[in-house]
Amino acid sequence: MKAAVIDSYGPPDVVRIAEVPRPEPKRGQVLVRVVATAVTAGDARIRGARFPRGFAPLARLALGLRRPRRPILGVVLSGVVEAAGPGAHRFRPGDEVCGMTGAALGAHAEFAAVSERRLAPKPGGVSHADAAAALFGGTTALHFLRDRAALTPGRTVLVNGASGAVGTSAVQLAKHLGAHVTAVTSARNAELVVGLGADRVIDYTSTPLEQLGERFDVVLDAVGNLPRASGMRLLTERGVLLLVVADLWDMVRARGRVKAGRPAPERAEDIEYLLGLVASGVLRPVVRELGGLGAIVDAYRLVDSGHKVGNLIVDVAPSGT
Image (cartoon, rainbow, N blue to C red; front, top):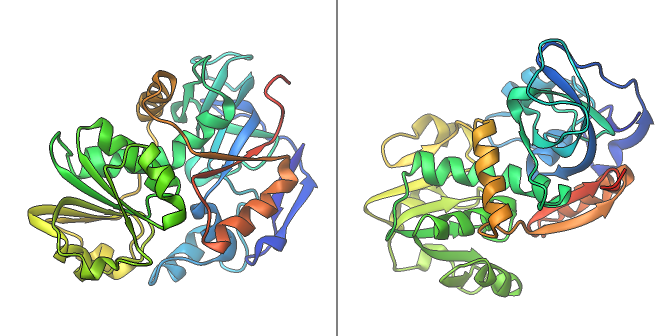
């Protein structure tokens, strides 16, 4: 099979398309023929070995000191079950599924072996591209807003970085949970986030958050450029600060009204919940589709530019194949 392979940490050009052996599904796994996969900020951090401050030594120990121990990156996929491994009974060949591979990575390929516990059925009315786009940002936003902040109707939410994968999901999920949402993004993305449900938009290029005189019940920083102290000043008396991208020191200090670390658990039930919202039109994934595995290099360039909007989806195989 073909896969996007990384032999060393570095810029997007370290990615090459190569023929590699097709994985064999182990116990409890199924082999998925990948139709669509996402290229995320998390993938780019691994590829470039650009980790939040303080995490570099730990990340390299986990991922590989001099080069990625797992050369095929990617954690999000949507596709069709090709075969089932021993003890896998939930899905059968031909089933359309989507899910996340976790620490196993491997989604940037024509086939991936995935635990059944990390997969959910893809609704018939949801495209593979939309299914893949809903997962990375969607599971993260859901975990922080619903599970960590216990968001309830009537509360006020500020989403910093509202036009990215996590931010576009956070705006929509906060509205779905009944919140009044203020979105922070650039002026060129204001129309987009208003269309997603934001009640108000702040252009960070003209209104620095440090100068904002308002207070919010929940502040979600999706990009990691809001200092902890500045975030705390934006909170109401019982407000909660959600640091989706936190350095090691902020993670160590996170307690009480500051929530950081503990990434989304990638549960099948959360994936099914998000896909249900997509199928019903409540959640609209923001998607830019790029064709073929070779487009992963261009996708990484877009991520590295800092101007990615929504989700970058690589169409590994046409939906009808």
